[in-house]
Image (cartoon, helix red, strand yellow):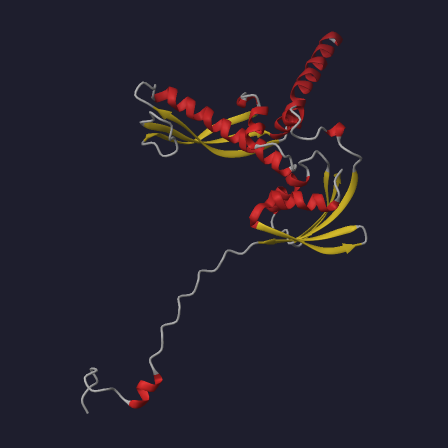
Length: 267
């Protein structure tokens, strides 16, 4: 009986160890479009559908990798980032599914010579962002955690963070170089966070600004002790231009009265 319990305990431990990497996986859901060109001799049907699915997985993984490199301030080109992944896209895709099978249609996305039609699917891919980051670090595109300079803590008061998705976007950008990001306080449209980084505060802000893109503007608001205050403002869309005012009539002509033959009503 004791031997049976021991065997069961070892089995449970082995299962837990096997599941541990999956529990630590850093997953992100990415939606993408996959398409393949079809020519006169191309196989359609299920083969084209599978090829389009794999193209969508590749697109999702590549976008994740390029985004990580941009957030970390890497200088490598997007082509170099894609090459660093080694073409093994499914290695980084934990799960994937087709959201919409758009089937075969006239070529809109595919412009390669000989393309008479294309097969298109919309996919959702759960990408292991941590594995992508590790691969980019191994290729020298991202800084390896052990090779970074001395790290220090920077406390940021981010004012204007009015939604949780925006905070997740900011947190992902701040953590792109591998440092820890710890939220200390959530208040109305305000997040106080501590960031472990090897960068100067100005470099952290530059990297965060690039990650947020043109949708938001960051503005320094001074400091409160050891806390740097940063305003995060959404860029308002440009208002449509107002039509020009119609020209007014000549007031001199109105004062003098209408000239004969100008269509004025008879007296």
